[in-house]
Length: 244
Image 1 (tube, rainbow, N blue to C red):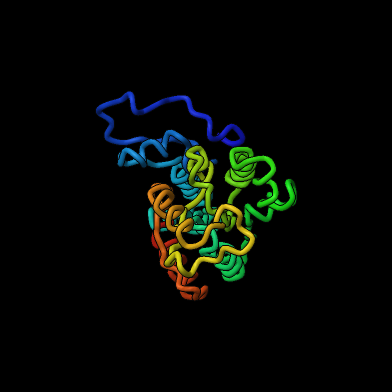
Image 2 (cartoon, rainbow, N blue to C red):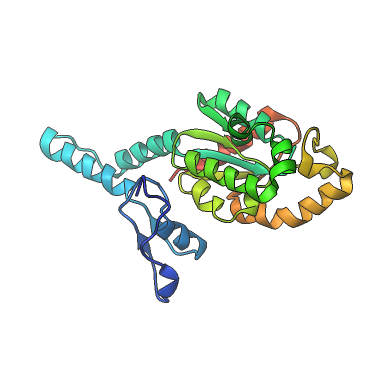
């Protein structure tokens, strides 16, 4: 559990007859144990419903209340709504920063742009990649994602290549729902992006390589047509429908 996430004690891939997985930890919401269960499509649950139910039972017993399942579900929904991160992934220039800011304003949340945070540490990203190489940059990026992935209640806008590092998935998914933004490569912005230089053909190569990676990370894919309010509404509708 926090602050040791995403450490893991049990590899459930070794168990061939699992029908369900429960982890009483509730920080992070999804431990590696639960992420494994999710990927194996095994029914699973974290510890927050147990904590809330325990509190409700205590209120009933000591304060004479008559709370039940309905109240437990509402409390859970409210807590999930407050704590679950919204994470944006997608091709460079697809609009993650713009949508992230719009989501932050709509929800009254802090929006973290991973690239902007990295620039505070390493300077211009294109220059860093040119001088130090992409692997060195990806390691710095992974450290930043790990830092923010342990936090809750954020909008996190990631860099276009974060999906090329598999360990980033656990850091992002442990406390958040991941949304892939898409639009035609012809509409992508390439200004100041060294890894996108080379014109439309380079972008098509990136898209072909990364699309399976984006899809493996994302719980929801959203077509972004440069209409931020529309995209925000689509994300919020899905977010609300998947709180429990």
